[in-house]
Amino acid sequence: MIYQQQARFPDGFLWGASTSAYQVEGAWDKDGKGPSVVDMLSHPPGTADFRVASDHYHRVEEDVALMAQMGLKAYRFSIAWSRVIPDGDGVVNPDGLAFYHRLIDALTRHGITPIVTLYHFDLPWALELKGGWLNRKTGEAFVRYARLLFSEYADKAPLWLTINEQNTMILHPGAIGVPADRALPDKRSLYQQNHHMMLAQAQIFALCHREFPGLRIGPAINTTSMYAESCRPEDAIAAHNWETLRCWSFMDVAVHGRYNALAWAYMRDRGLAPEMQPEDALILQQGNPDFIAINYYSTATIAASRGDGGDVAPRAGDQQIMLGEEGVYRPAENPWVGKTPYGWVVDPVGLRLTLRKVCERYGLPILISENGMGAPDKLEHDGTVNDDYRIAFLDAHIAQMRLAIADGVELMGYCPWAAIDVVSTHQGYAKRYGFIYVDRGEDDLKSLHRVRKRSFWWYKDLIAQNGNTD
Ligand code: BGP
Image (tube, rainbow, N blue to C red):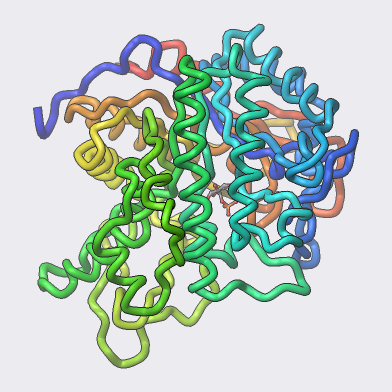
């Protein structure tokens, strides 16, 4: 039924949680790991860096045991490319491979399905020095790295994601940070980088299906539905522009193996279209995904350009704050939705809408690979963390997932950000997302002791009922 009926979550639904390597592991130079681009970032004074992070590298068994206690059916994590191949494309580091065997084996022992992201923002620094994604060879190295991981872990890790939030890296390059001595790449270079990622991803889909037929793989785009500020037709066009450029243009290449027409016209008209080699059109069509993963946090509201040179918001943006682009779209306020303390729109109904759109466009199963609420959680004197706001946030989104299933969406699983507190891309440990609290400050590592938050117990209970809590 279109409006009301609540479906039930199917048996085997993957109730999970997410992290990424550089935000959780620490051990940034341990046991042969090479540096990655994120290790080269400078951090605002008093903000945590990634050297120790949540020390997961040294506490992997303890952390997985906690995940098991929470009842997780799946755990989505990323592999640090420079941990397994320190320079990104040379000698393999056996200790790096061994760490992920330990992690995957621990998960398997506890009946938790591993969902592995090949690459989550942390390009090996050695590859960056050779031009990073602007260099076509980085894509070739990425394909070799993917083959290595598939051969190593295929028999115990069935679900894979290629690139985390390719659209964040291309459209909000400053969101992840830039090493102090480097400038942000210009837009033309960013779209060329994007093209190289697309080529590599298509080849990885193809090689995965050809050589490792038991595996299922998909892209993981940060996906945000856009509302028009009003029913003025120009506002509708602006919202459609930005939704297409920000989300669908990335997924369309992944699924259909060709560029979205509107996105191509946008790039062509501005001199941003990537240089294509004669073989590229065929490469893009080589492979396609088995499912679509989305990272969903917010929706955005968009108005038409006013043509007054004021479409771009005068503030630094992050991956969830729309910045505006002259003549293309202008961010607007939505009086019908809430916001987190960090200005991220809270819109559970928007999740249902987004799931419908992805389902309608691609007809593939969907995995929610991130969704969550960042907050300055507090460890109380009695040792508890009472994150009722997070429970309310997740609960509201899960209710909309049920409605989306009733709408006909094939939803595979839900992996909120984050399984455990991790370093936030902007706010260190001041902004937390985990079900499990990590006792550390920004500079002060404290005990790094783990504390189960109230949301931990709530999620455990929900999973025990397979999400069908009424
Ligand atoms: C997503 C990233 C994650 C994570 C999350 C929360 O865009 O994929 O890596 O960082 O956002 O973001 P933040 O830490 O900036 O609040």
